[in-house]
Length: 328
Ligand code: COA
Image (cartoon, rainbow, N blue to C red; front, side):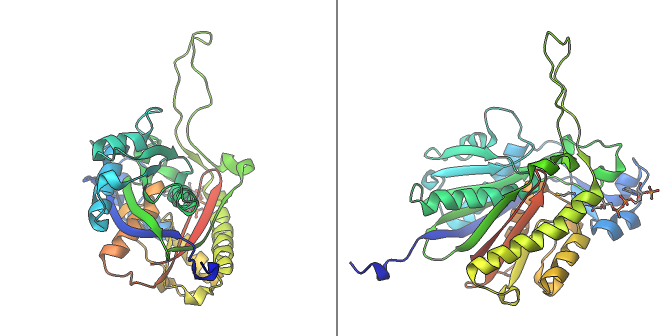
């Protein structure tokens, strides 16, 4: 066989889905519990409201989003070889959330594990699925980002509680000749203290204490500076690897933390802000769910046409950040 004729397989997104909790919490609702107001939140972040889980768990939302992605792709649950759930707020330490999703979907043939990379989680999980698929180990994977950060937030801390919301997004991916063109993942553990959640305090009988889970803490300005520096860098890197200029990209689906961060990224890349779809006004920062919820809205809204060049990028605690360039 002429080896020049053999096309290398990559990973293609063939279906998307999302789920957000029923309960809407507006900026005015938050102004009733902390010293804040709608104008401050909107002007600093672009967020108008968020969904907060009251009865929905992380795995439940992940499974609902996954069901919709399976339906959208036409793939049956039994065809899934791998389920990756990106989450920082799983329902349990074990079993992992991906296994719970497997049980809810009946995806009996899948290997399942969670990925912890905070708001970069979906980008990390998609990269991981891509590595398994490119190696030939698996053919079809379900990649999910789901978080219920509302259970980890200090609702008396106005500097964090106004920013986040709950939700889930999913993508079915499969080996194909077109799809992911280039990707990267980055981490900087020495800067981890700027965005943390969970206590390091052990609880055991020697200490006479029960284990306690700490709330989220954040140095907002440091996170802001990190995001506007690192996201343009990793997007530039992925575009260079794919041999594509920023102007040739049709859509940039970037983590929905803050509208001002997205404006700054667009400016640094010298690309019109119109190429950056946004939805943080409705959902706030849904952490690992933010990129796949946005992608699902773009897909179902008819924004994505076959052949479109799309960049996905996330950033968050770790610190972690990364990007993927793909052809839709
Ligand atoms: N409502 C009203 N005032 C608030 C407030 C709120 N919800 N939160 C903070 N403030 C106050 C501060 O106390 C401060 O008051 P002071 O000047 O009297 O001390 C003032 O607003 C300015 O605070 P500052 O932190 O300088 O605001 P900022 O312009 O940096 O905006 C963030 C704060 C959090 C919106 C911004 O830093 C940010 O978006 N950072 C990135 C956060 C992020 O995206 N995290 C998740 C990443 S995955």
